[in-house]
Length: 203
Image (cartoon, rainbow, N blue to C red; front, side, top):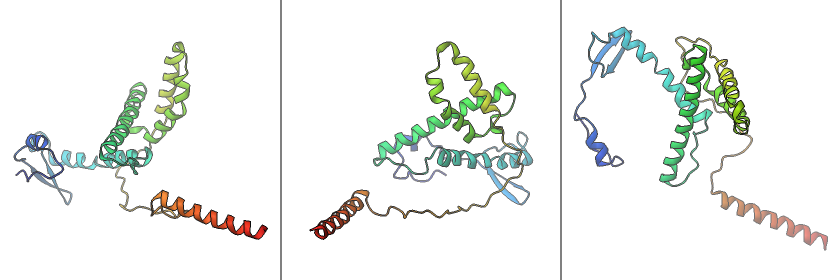
C-alpha cells in the first residue's frame, strides 16, 4: 500500500503515485528477488536473475557521474542552484552517452563496451578543436573523434564483484573545517603579527 506523503514530496507528485504495487518474489541461486515483472511465462526466474546481475551497470553509472564528472561535491549553496547544478551534470552525462552511442553504432559494438572516462577525456581534448573547426571539415573531425571513442573498449569482465568500501588516500593538506573567510582572517592576523615583529627588529 502507498505510504503517507513525505514532507519533501509535493502533493501533485504524491497523487501520481499508484495506490498499490503487485510484486513477484522469485528464489534463485540463494537470492530472493522482488520484481514488478509478475508474469513467469513472460520472464522466467533465470531471466530475472540475469537482469538482476545487470545492476552492476547502475553502480558504474553512478560512479561516472560522481567521480569522473566530479559531482561528488556540490558547490552551490541554495537548494535552487543545487538542483540546477545536478541537472547540468546529468545533461552533460547524457550528452557524453549519446556520443558514445554514435561511436558504438558506427563500430558495431555495444555502448556498454566503451569507456565513459576515456570518451569524456577525448571530448574535452578535442573541444577547442571542434569549436574552431571550419564548417567544411567538421564532419571529418567528428568522425575522427567518434573513431577514437570507439577504440576505448572495456575488457570483458563477467561476474565482476567489488567490496563496498572506500580506500582513503592520505592527503598532504588538512580538511577545511571552518569557514574560509574565518581562516583567511586568522592568516592575515598572523602575517601582520610577523610583519610587526620584523619592523620592530629593524628599528
